Length: 155
Image (tube, rainbow, N blue to C red; front, side, top):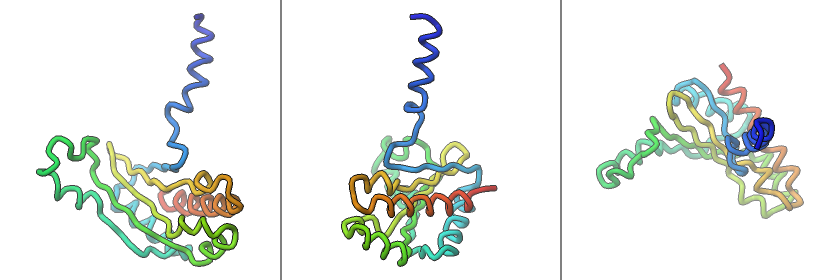
């Protein structure tokens, strides 16, 4: 195969090799985990997405370090935190579009720190709702959440 064909093949395959999984949206920031978490929390609440539960999964996993041995934190994550949140207006909109999509509510976001960067991960609601009469509403909610998160972690 010529260099030209290899170059074309590399360009075609590259996005699929480094893309997020289809069902997840991942944002990155150089902010420390605690600062990013605090900003995301405040940004969600400012937009009436109330945080109803918080979990420090990294600390909880740390309790099992001895029990899990070599299987403990093999990616050397510096922290994992999560929050569950909800917006009642969006819950109503989603329920009106397709009651089965209420399985998406409440929503959740996970933040983890790895190699000096904080990653913010949320489910892609539009991808999860494909084929539903509420797919457009779910995509709208996804875009709203992405906008909130983008603004929250921007420097």
